[in-house]
Length: 55
Image (cartoon, rainbow, N blue to C red; front, side):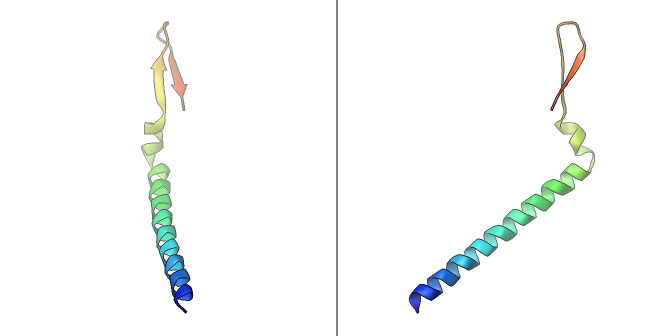
């Protein structure tokens, strides 16, 4: 009986971890849906002064 309780406890912990990861994913999706995606684009000038985009 103790082994079954230990397994149930582990399952409960994994479910909590899953919920935390789902919340993080939703937060990232919300940030990327806004204009913050433009903030992720890096533009660098080459030696001629031309802008190059790196993603």
